[in-house]
Image (spheres, rainbow, N blue to C red):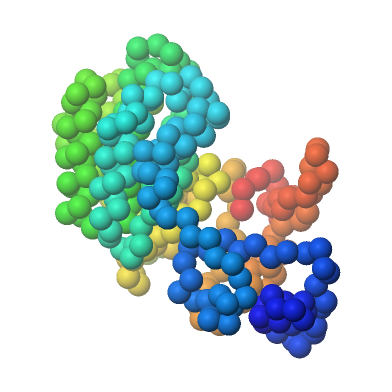
Length: 314
């Protein structure tokens, strides 16, 4: 109960009934999205400062995303600068994603954070294939990576009809920078560093199989798309949220995507339900991870070597 901590009593009451006195030199500052869950008693004990969303425009958020990308790799970001500029395709695609989808309250930060992770994964692919973003060919790869990453970062929560519309928007922008291709960007083709012109059809990634056991994933263009997306986000240590009805293959998609690189990933599964508690997550982490002190005297959780060998990502 925070009310007793915010009034003159200065006493924090915990759920177990324990009472902790708050020192006189301690102040509480709460940063929340809205006050829909705050009680009148809590609001009356606090001063409220409302920061309107219009104070930070969408273009400001896009520029902030570009600066983060530039701080990580200036050469890679520089090749895509025009796409992040005012009236560029990044701003238009993010604005399109705000129309909704499976998410009731989409935010530009969700799309921009996913875009950053996917572009850094593309940067890693460029480095692996020795593609220099400062050259004309390398700049073409960077731009095409942005178009492909925008499709999934902005359209990942959309239905198929809206994804096609987003793909058409990206195709029109790509044609203006000589990066156009046949098919819908992201849906029909992907940006791949190994492809001669950096565009690769998803169908070309589907292997031919004659037999499959009951525990295997039948490869299709859809499974190739989803597995590549999950693998790219995991490689950048970004969270992924797979949404779909029971039986749509979410668990098998994750298993198959992570199994393709068992030397890097160690999987720890937790089936969540209404009764799942934070202690269940902590117990799972304690079983698979151990605390390690870093060079700067900070602590981090890493997979236990005895269980997972040299794999560094759980």
